[in-house]
Length: 541
Image (cartoon, rainbow, N blue to C red; front, top):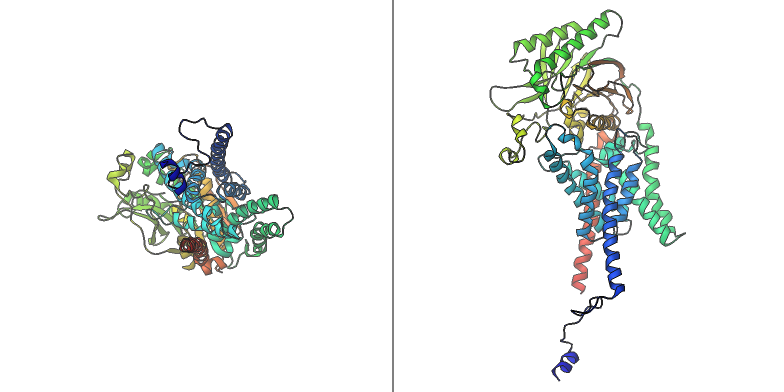
């Protein structure tokens, strides 16, 4: 009697349609369905990680830039229609597949812990990006919102934590691609947006065409693939290697280091001597008519780890080399004040007046030039104590007047930051110099990744970029992104080239961060619309 009443009143706990009573045998169809779901989950996870690997393969030294949109199309297939939690997990897997091989050089001399920690931290940001893409995939015209979400993720990664780590932006793998001119229109955010839009649009076009062949929607979605390519081709006239303000003959010195690895710093005098010796050799070649005389010379970052203001011997070595070549030379030195942090400094050294103006690096590399949370990090790696005294950041952009040419200093890690390069060009740089030191990263792909980044900066601001590196690859890059000449790794050399000088501004230089802000607003608008819909549906319910 009580059981009948219970059923009649609906108070008996309902049994799920796909869950048998306790102790009952599981139907074969249900078991197959559960196994299929697990199989699909595993396949989706594998494809997400594979999309990250493909994205890595699109980066130099491989000329496979076209893999990037294909990688994002594959990732879109994994994320489309998924819930937020699944989107985060799949995005994290894609981030690990991408960043673990891309950043393996960070553990070259200090072991796997810093490499794994950095790669995982940065992959978490891509996980958040995957979450956002999964959510906005419910919207109409979702590829637009998803591409904007990708740019927003890159913007966050470039700012946090510890000042950000923009390495691995989509834009930096596109130096040889058809999308490249987009960077002259709206900087790296617009270039990344174009690549992402093409990838996400490619997946959506294929999805609609498969589900509804011949539908107009498929043709319209195909525009998201064609539009970035079309705009890139239309912007091609902005990319030029012509001289706007005449030319100059420059020399880039690569002195090489006595040995690889972190211990090259113990040979500081040998590194300085190498660069001085190669400069004197260039002076002899000029005197013998084997090389044209440069108007100015640029040495790498850390070419003198001995403070020339405090070490008379170092001062004399540099001064002798500069007097031998007889033109202004930009010297990369570590300056050690009596108090306060160290300074990673570029010094303009005149053959008559000696050291004159200086530029202090503004973007200081965390866990490389400074150690945040030193006591905590020491628990994981004793190598932090190799950095005994932190470097401090400069405040103002540095543009040296070198034989009448405005040469802007963007030291190594700074080239990854949009604002650091843009502010230098706006301060009057007709040429950008990116003095760098990659001796601690051996023969890894780091130097080629950085060179590709420098090529993108050349196109972005239509400036010649000079890349003097202690151990390679040093290069001279024209304003159209083409490499005029480059050195071999770990080889002492001097590159002498006639370069175009330019003082005009590209649209990217003029509009600055506005495209990035607009794309962040677009991403926020898409996510805000979803939030509004959810709130409204709950109120209606």
